[in-house]
Image (cartoon, rainbow, N blue to C red; front, side, top):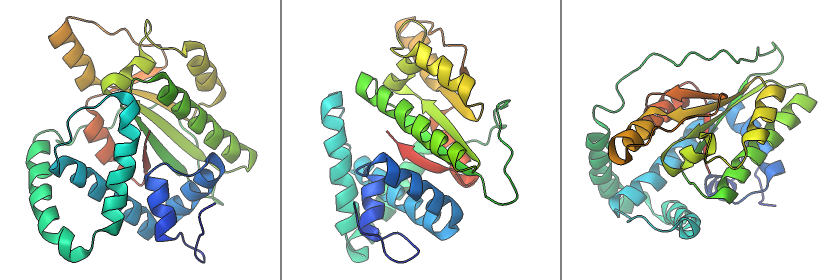
Length: 246
C-alpha cells in the first residue's frame, strides 16, 4: 500500500491513483478524500491534464489495446518527474494545441436529463465519480463494472451517498451495444440494484459509426446518450466529479 501523508494524500499516492495502480479498497478511500477536499480534487485534475498534454504533444499513434496501459503509466510518471521549469514552455505549446483542437467541441450544452438520482444526506457530502471507458477490450469492460459496483456497495454499506457514471465512447461503446456487449445481464442487474448508477453513451461515437461504417449501434435500454464524451467530462469535472479513466 502506498504511503499517505497526514490528513492528505502524498504526491506518490496521487500519481499512482491517476495511473490506476492502486487496489479497489485504496481507491474507495481516495474517492472520499478527493471529493471532500476541493484543493485535492483540483490537484488530481491538474495531474490528469498534464498527463493528457504530454500524450497529446507527443502525438502518440494508436496502439493495440494490450499496449495502451503501459503508455498511460509512462506518461503519468513523466508528468510527476518533470520540473516546472521544463514543463512551462512545453505546457504553453501543448495547451494551445489542446485548446484549438477542442474549440467548438466544448460548447456548453444543457445537462442531460438524469432520472436516476441519489439524495445526499446533511451529514455526508455526495461522492460523485465518473469512469471513462474508451477501450473495447473485455477485461477493461469487466474492470469498470467491478470498480463501480465495489464503490457503490461500499458507500451503501457505510450509509454514505455516492453517484457513479460510466461513460463509454470510441471502442468502449461496445459495452452498451446490444449485439456486442459481453455483460448485458450484469449491466441490467447493476442498474436495478443501484439507481444512482448511470450508463452514458457518446453521441459523437454513434454518429461516426453511422457515417463511416453505415452501422446503427442499437444500445442497451440502460444507456442514456450524451452529446459528446469530452464535453461531458469537462462538464462533470466542473461540477466536482472525480474523473477516472479505465
